[in-house]
Image 1 (cartoon, rainbow, N blue to C red):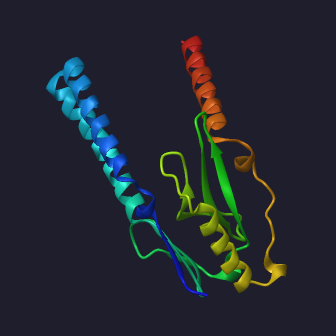
Image 2: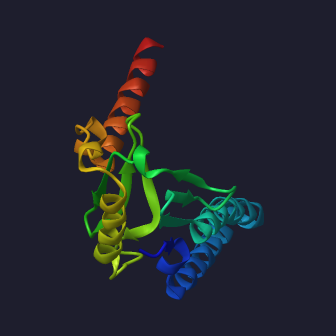
Image 3: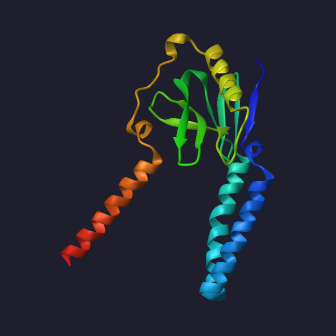
Length: 186
């Protein structure tokens, strides 16, 4: 079997960069109107400071699948190779939102940790028509390289059962209750 490489930059569409530029421009216009030049510099500067590194790292991230195992590159450093004997299970994490769902392949390690495979993902913003095929290729490499007895599906943890939206609501409620308690104590 040939070594496979899935690059994060293959998921990007040029329209995403155009949309980001339009949104930053709109943000700049509204910030300039409401906050003046210092507000414009602060708001747009902070947005660019947060967005550009995240997009750069996503653009440079990739996954390599071969004889040695699965190597994950997150955009900086040399990456990390997980030998096949350390890969306990491979599955797809589905995250639902109101408008669409996103899917990401991930590996499970014997320590209980999970690692998402960069480049083997699909979402509404970054659709990947080959996601199912890519995931199946990774699974085939894993099945080819491991003994069936070493493939153990880990039990579901709470993070597998609760969506990020539910966690956000819970954190929001805890913060609101905390604020009410602080106000009540004063």
